[in-house]
Image (cartoon, rainbow, N blue to C red; front, side, top):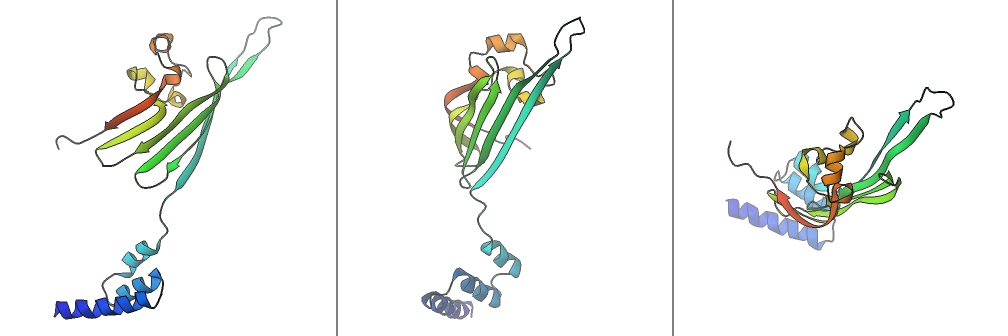
Length: 178
């Protein structure tokens, strides 16, 4: 009985395909035969989620006030960054960030420029210029650092400019136990 229904369905689907109808006609046929629910059909007709792009950025201002006679007030942009992140596909993402004003010379610098390939849920491969996990303080995003700067010790011990380096990295996470 199921074989007969499957054969009839296959003949009807092939006639839809041979007639040159669109993917929507095929989906409508599957819904009319109660093989797909209308909700499942809707998920099939939605556009893919890729590529995606998200623009982001932040600015840190620093102000000082000298109350002595004749002293000028100090206000400056300590750091300003703008970036673009997104996904090219389900397994490939990118991150590109430019620091418009970056310490120590307040000149523009490339902060991040990397691509992630995520072949499995367990690990990723990253290639390009990216953040190097160096110490506990270095791993904190700079825009979350209330002191606006990392400590002098951490800055002097870090051999990488902006805590970034160029290369390829393999990393990931897994659940070892419940």
